[in-house]
Image 1 (spheres, rainbow, N blue to C red):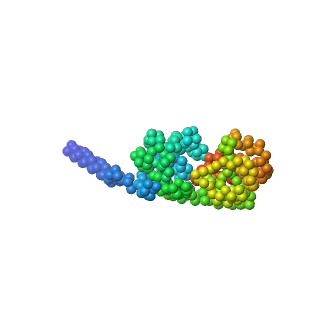
Image 2 (cartoon, rainbow, N blue to C red):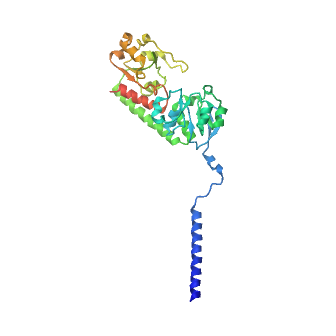
Amino acid sequence: MKKNMKFRRLFFTIVMSLLVLIISACGNDDASPEPESEGGTESSDVTLDSGMGEVTLPGNAEKIMAPFHEDALLALGVTPVAKWAIGQSVQDYLEKDLKDVPSIEWNLPLEQVLSHEPDLIILQNNMDSYEGSFDDYNKIAPTYVMKEETVGDWRKQIETFGTILGKEDAAKKAISDYEEKVADAKEQIAEGLGDETAAVIWAVGNQFFLFEQNRHSAEVLYSELGVKQPKLIEELGEADAAAWNPISVEKLSELDADHVILLALEGEQGIETLEKSSVWQSTPAAKKANVHLINDPSNWTNKGLIASQETIDDVLSALVK
C-alpha cells in the first residue's frame, strides 16, 4: 500500500513537471522574436535630394529643429525642440502652440543648437545667415538643407517634411483641408465683397509698408481668395524679395482701394498718424470707414499653411459682413 502511494506521488510530480515544461515552451513560441541586430531600425531611414545633394536621414527622429519653418512642422502635428527668434521676438501667430518651447537665435549659434540635442536639423538653403556651416550642424545631428524652391513654397515644404518624417498622409490631408478652406472662403468673398477692392498696409512705428500682390500673405488675398486689386497695387507689380521700402502718407493718397486692412500692433504710432492725416482721411477706404485694423501682423508677414489659414480668417472677419 505504501509503495503504491509513493508511486502515485512520484507519478504526479513527473506529470506536473512535464506540464510546466510544455507551457513554458508554448509561451516561448508565442513571444515576438528578438531583432537580429541593432541595425533593424535602418529600414526607416529616408534618402532624398537636398540643397546639399543626396542625404540619408533618420526616419525615427523625435527632437526636430527647423528654425523659422515651425509652421510646416506644426501643420504635420510635430512640435519642434526649439523655435526661431530674434531676441525676444518670435512668430507670434504660432505661440498658441509654441509658448512653452524654448527659443533659439535666428543665426543658430552652435552652442545653442547643441544644447537642445536635436535628432534632426532642417535648414534653409541660404547658409550665409547661420553662424555655422553645414558640416558643423551635421556633426551635431543629421542635417537637411532645403532647396530654394522648397523654402519659397510652403506646400512643397509640407510635402518634403512629410517625406522626411514619415507623415506623407498627414501632409496630403493638411494641404487638402486647406484647399477646401480656400474654396469656401472664396465663395463667401465673391458673394459678400463682389468687385470691391482691398489693400494691405503694415504700420511699423511711424512707417507704412504697402503689400504688393505677392508680398507675404497678400498672395492669399489676391491669388487664392480672388480679392480685386486697386490700381496702385497693380502698378507696383510683384514684390522684390530683397527690398521693401516704406511708402509715404502722401503716396498713400493715390490708394483707391474700397477697403484697407491695416496691420499694426496695439498703440503703434502709425495708427494715430493716419487718423490725424487729412491726406489719408480723403482716401476712399477712410471715407467709407472701411479701414479694418488687425493688431497681430505676424501671420500676414509670413508664408505657411497656418499663416495662410489665419489670414483667411482675418479677411473673412474684416471684409465679409
